[in-house]
Image 1 (tube, helix red, strand yellow):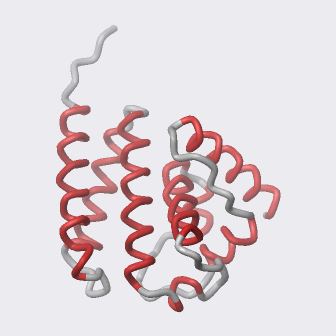
Image 2 (cartoon, one colour):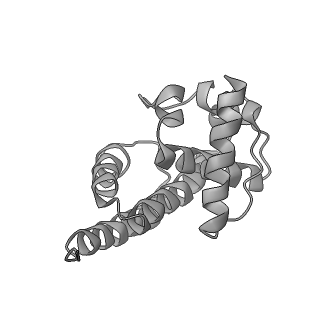
Length: 158
């Protein structure tokens, strides 16, 4: 499994570098611990789900990278042991990068699905979202909902 994780990280890292995010510096062990560690929410997304989706790989790697930038060590307890503001700040940055990446690739269908999930699971029904991040979370939703709509309405040229 480690070789598969390394390969997927490498592929996503190259995409992120080309997309302007920069180097993520996440090891296979850190990724595995993050994905299989303790969480405080009901997230049905599995390690296999993420490894099978370039967009979810982008999301998780940015999220891990952002948490590391805030001085946290990535292990199986980092999510539950870190202040929620740290985790949600990283989550919002990762969500934005994932949506931007999908829309730039022309995958507005993915962006719309993720925006709906984001609205339902974070904006409408997440008691853990720190109040000081609510405005940022709502603005992210409105911005990318408008961008996905605009991009999906562009006429196709043959």
